[in-house]
Image: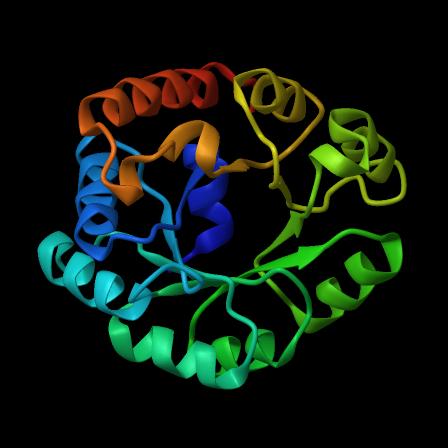
Length: 210
């Protein structure tokens, strides 16, 4: 898949991490049903590989599905085998290269200018600025765009509706949203409330200036 193009089109990545695999699966499917096209299932969630496998079966082969918290080469291989077609990492570990070798584009975690340069040298699809809320938020993102005006930044970490609007306005390609979107749905919470939040964040993404 062309992850960079998908991020530019949809502007939103939902991050699902839960302690209830069945609820996590319901969450992924509800997000997809609400038109959230890019969903990552964090490998730090319970039985995450099983969630990815079952989500892939339910969604079919053409719907994008990512694996998050890919740290190692083994993580990348396991996620690929489970059916993930893109990888999201918190940093520049061995999982980045392994995922690329398997044909999985990578949204790679970076924070500093040095890490951004290193990630771009690896040819990653996009740059996950993490954790953004603890690092200056949209103001930090705007500062990074000075030396890196065309970099495909995707801020993640503490992205609520206010931060999502601010980061997209500051030039983010897309935003990655976890608990402010997913809430407790992946732990067995309300799917109805999840759907409402999904519609809100989709509206924010759709209203953002390209």
